[in-house]
Length: 138
Image 1 (cartoon, rainbow, N blue to C red):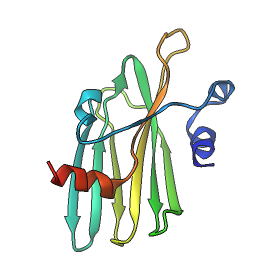
Image 2: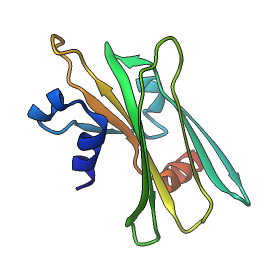
Image 3: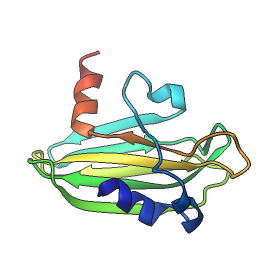
């Protein structure tokens, strides 16, 4: 259901005729391979993630982002979607959770031109909590 909502909100109707976008999970090991940077701030007020995304990947353009907040049982309790056109700057996606029992995912969508041989994709930090643990264990 969540992937359907991503498609519904983030993509133009012309993309609907294609299959769902492949999801590429961003991890501490591969995040820089795709041109992303991740920064965290963990305070007594909560956790903030800044995901800095490239303007394009393999000639596919950044078209938007989403942030999901999940409760302790993994249910999505809040979602934000942003559709944007970015030219000449590095997109930055910010998510914040104040309750330490909640988790968050951040996803970025890249749409390839129709005449391209590339496939549009969604890049995601699926679990901010897991990403932080993996980062600290290095």
